[in-house]
Structure formats: structure tokens, C-alpha cells
Image (cartoon, rainbow, N blue to C red):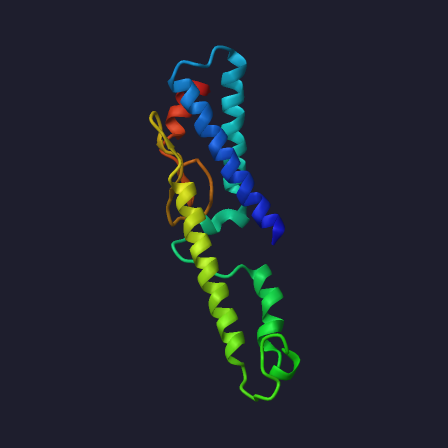
Amino acid sequence: MFKQKIKEERLLTSLDGLVAQIDQLEQDQMETYQQLVDLKSSLIQTQDLLADPSLQWIAKDSFEVPGALNLILDPIFSRPPAENVLLCDVNLNDQPCPNVLQLRSFTTQTGNANFLTFRASLLAKKTEATGKLIVATTTASCNFTGNGQLTTPAREFFEKYLS
């Protein structure tokens, strides 16, 4: 689960760096060939991050609790109240107890809110020259090439100037 969060943070950082470099290019502040090479490297790095199958959830419109989180929470949700003393009144025989239902609901609601916020921040990344850097679609793969779940209108811009 922490590996996933690290990948998400790397993608966000990579996109921020890419936006900054494109802004530099737009403002004629790139003075060396190496800066252009670095821009191309940043684009490739971002493409590689977007191609990671574990990040394809970004292209979906709805949230699903990640499998790793379910592996952790399912044993808690399925315990009898007598074994869930931190969440349940041991004198009640309600199965599941109300606090377990609240925890499950809270997990889903919080996850959905975080998903929507993070996804919106990624899809909002844009520059003057390229427009949006990522556009979520519904096809099968995840990359910048125009045939995937995460594509970019900026692809032609980069291929034209950095190829």
C-alpha cells in the first residue's frame, strides 16, 4: 500500500517538474541543449510512471478500495463483536456491530474523497503551450501515446520539438 502511495507521489512530482520545464521553454528560459535533453528525459519518466498498471485507476471515474487495503480491513470487518473489543460492545451480539459499519463507511468515503482530490490534481496539470498534460479516457492501456487510458494532447508538441 505504501509502495502505491510512493508511486502516486512520484507521478505528481514528475508532472510538477514537467510543467515547470515546459514553462521555462515557453518563456525562452532554456539556454542550453542539456536543458532540452532534461525536458525530454522528464517526459519519458512521466510516460513510464503513467504506464505503470498500478496507476491505471486514475483513468476510472469511480473509486474502489484498493485490494491491499481490503486485505488489511477485511479481517477486522469480519471478526465477531467479542473479538473486536476496540470497535464493539462485547455485550451486544449485533453482527456486524454498528462501529464496524461506520468504519467501513468512513474508509470508503475517505478513500473516495482522496481519490477524487488526487485525480483532479493530476488531470488539472497543464501549460500554456500544451494545454492539459493528461486526459483520462476509457481504453485499455495507460500512457501518453494517444491509445491509452491516460493520454496527452501535448504528445505532438513534444515529438515536434524534442525528437
